[in-house]
Image (tube, rainbow, N blue to C red; front, side, top):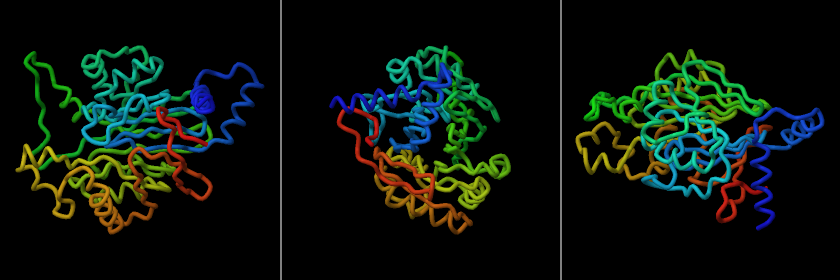
Length: 328
C-alpha cells in the first residue's frame, strides 16, 4: 500500500505546471517526460481521465458519483490539474463543485458564455476558471490546450431556449448554446483531441490537419455520419475512440415520440447496449463514408496505455482499490 501511495504522489508531483527552478531540475523533468506514456480511461458518457506523458492529469466532462449509469466515485480520482468542459449540461458538469473542493488548484476550462451560469449554479471559486472562445490557445509548462467552437447535437424537434421564473436563461439552454472542442498537446508532442456536437462541414476546414494521436469523437444516432466521416478524415487522427450515448432510456420512458429519431439498428436504447450496438453501427457508417483511422472502443473505467511508436493501445492493470492512478 505504501508503494501505491508513493506512486500517486509521484504522479501528482509530476503534473505540477510551475516553471522549473533550475537547469538541473528541468533536465530531470525532461528525462521523466521521456520515460512516460499517455494513460487514459473512459469514465462514462463524455467523461475521460487522462494522464499525459509529462504527468499532467486532465479530466474531460467529468460525471462521477451522480452519473445515471457507470458512476465513478470521486475517491477514485487521485489528481486533477485541468478540467475541460465541452458544455454545461448536467451530464457533463454535475460533480464539478465536489471536484473543485477536492482539488482547489485545478484549472477549469469552459465556454465564455457558460462561465458565469456554471459558477453561479455550482458556487465555484472562479480564480482558476478559464473562459474559452474559438481558436484560443493556452500554454502551460506541461501542456498546451487549444479550443474550437462547436454546436450541440440537433434534435428533430429542434433546439429551443428555456428561461427560469426569474427570467434567466436556464443551465440547459446555455449548455446547448455554448459548446467547445479541445486539442490537448503534451510537451513531448503527444496530441489528444476532444470532439463533440453536430457534424458540420466547417469543422472539416477548421480542424483540417490537426493529426492528433487520439481523437475521442462524440457519436449519436442523430448525426450525419457522412459529414462526420469527412471531418475525421480531415483531422487525420491515428486512432478514433467513440464516446457519449445520446440515446437515453428516459427518452423512451418519458418522451416516446422522440424515440422515432433513433435508427432501428440501435434499439433498444438502454445504456449498456451502446457498446454492443451503437458503436459498431457508427463504425460501419463512418467506414462507408471514407474513414480510414483505427477505431477503438474502450471499456468503461478501464485504464489503457497509448504507445506512440506503432500507435498501439494496450490495457494496463486496474488501479488498486481506493486509488485512481494506473499502475506501472
